[in-house]
Image (cartoon, rainbow, N blue to C red; front, side, top):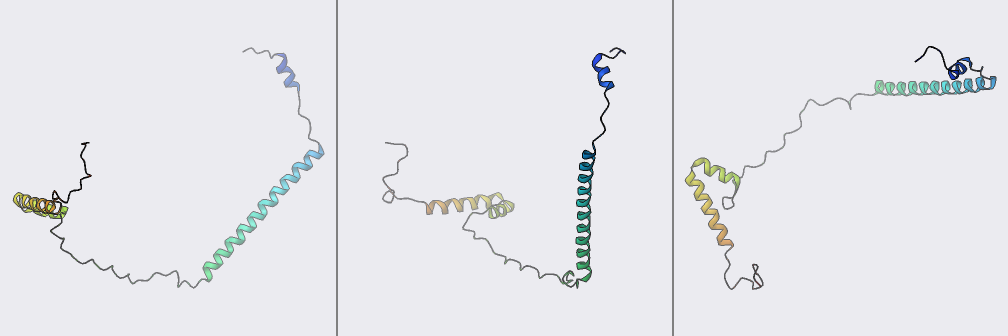
Length: 135
């Protein structure tokens, strides 16, 4: 980069901005006055709204704002029920395994026997339309 300016730089440096016309000055002033008026109206409305809210809080009775020192009644506890031992449940299996491995095996056998009894099909009651991949 050289210290001597090129012709374009010299030409740009010689240019001076024009003074704004009186018409432009009036338009800018009018726009600023309008925005100042809008800000003033907003500030007044915000102040009025804040005053109304504060007045409403001061004039309230307060009885609706207080909380009761009494507690709500406790929900009734569900009745303790003994699970149906005829159905397999995780709780029944856990109790059986905690007692002994033999109790666990006996419970498994009991439920396995009960499920096969309820699912036993005789040759007469089996529908003929059931096929297992055979044509």
